[in-house]
Amino acid sequence: MDFTREDALELLYEYTQSEGLRKHALGVEGAMRWYARKFEANEEKWGIVGLLHDMDYEQHPDKDEHPYVGVKILKEKGYPDDVTRAILSHADYTGVERKTLMEKTLYAVDELTGFIVAVALVRPNGIGDMKVKSVKKKLKQASFAASVNRDDIYTGAEDLGLELSEHIRNMIEALQSVREGLEI
Image (tube, rainbow, N blue to C red):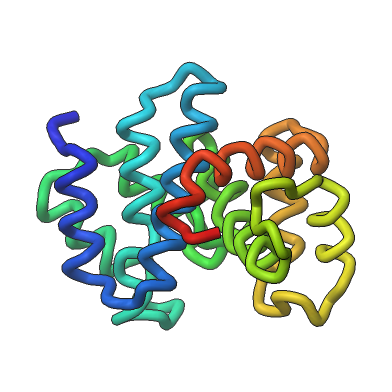
C-alpha cells in the first residue's frame, strides 16, 4: 500500500474540523495498530483504516451518506478495496458483512474507544490506572455515555472471539499507548 499515515492524517484534517472527532479517529487508530500487532497484521494499513473510518461523519452524519461519501473519496484517491470495505463494514446499516479480521476489529474497537475515553474523562487519573471492572460498571449504567451502543461493544468482542473483559483490557492498554494525543 502506497498510502502513509501522513496522507491519511491530511485527509482526516481536511474533512474533520471537530477536535473530538479527530481524537476519536486517533484513538481508533491506536486501537487498530495495537490489534494489528497482536494479530501480526499490517499495522500501517490497519492504522489508516482507524484514522479514516469516520472522516466524512462531521459533514455527512446521516445514514444515507456516512460512510459512503468518505469511501467514495477514498476510492477516487486510489485507496485499496480492503480499506474501503472495512470502513463500509463498520456501520451495520450499510449491509456490508464483516468477514476479515481487519473489518471485525474496526467494528470491535470503534464504539469501545469512545466509551473508554468517556470513562477516562470522569476519572481523576484518566486512563492511567483504569481497571476493566471500572469500564464494565459504567457499561451497566445506561445513563453514562448514553449514545454509545452497548450491543456493538458486546458483538464486537464476540466477533473477535474474545471475552468482553479481555477485549476491554486490550483496549485500555491500546489507548494508554496513545493517551497523550487523546488527552486522557
